[in-house]
Length: 342
Ligand SMILES: [Zn+2]
Image (cartoon, rainbow, N blue to C red; front, side, top):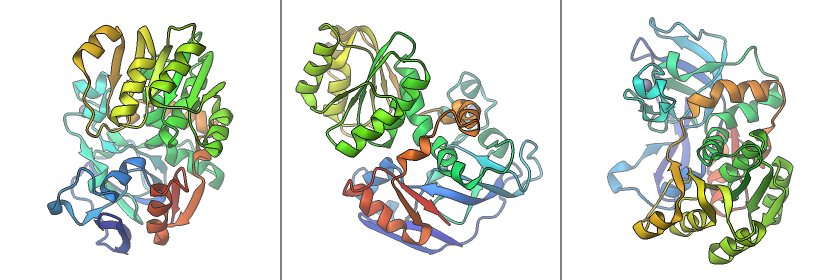
């Protein structure tokens, strides 16, 4: 089968990989209907956070597809069903899963290590990981369903962690796909005002389509000052951090009002939080790898009933064979997010 493999920074090739087999009785094999390139895939692409021993690495952790085969112990999904999973395989039964944090499941398996940018994918812990759609989706729903696998689920968790809801002013730091979908999530969760921070016209437009009521086009301290000015000097009730840099984290923390909530979902690279800063912020700060599986049934239902259309974040659609172009376009910020189809 074909699969995308990164051989070093900037070097993505779609090549022949061995087709996955059922290894554990709890596994499923799915035929990938759609995968995509994640903002977090750009960190190794830029040579950040990787060591020489990690190459070559199969790529991709966002997926939706059709079950081909299941192990003997799998009971909740069967061949022929369309399924969506998340970037951590999880049993969905351990105490951590039951508390809603499937991304820290005691049995979790990182899907990225298996490589979802491929024709076929082995999904461990299939019963806990995969959620079947009510029926076979029409083609136009597939981008939104694969978005639920990570980017929507992550933006959603960011908004939930930031306590977005009715009567709240929500600020979103980051205009990548996750930030934009945090805007959609905040809207869906009933936020009153949603301030998207973006300097890019096309991303501002999409943010407005997803529900942003205001745009702030400056960042850093100027961005914080702008949010304060728009909120009677108080700051936002809820701030979603969807970048993962020192600047974005500072901006998020400083833009929240005392007693407010910061939900951080950008994978933090080289971020240090100053203790005094945190102490005086009086903010609730919560985040990490999103427990997408917790939200999947609800997100699939919202997509299936066409109440949300997160698939709009894909502004580049490529055949799997051209995955390298998707990485390049996202790295250059020519594309918000690349969808990969077989
Ligand atoms: Zn678990």
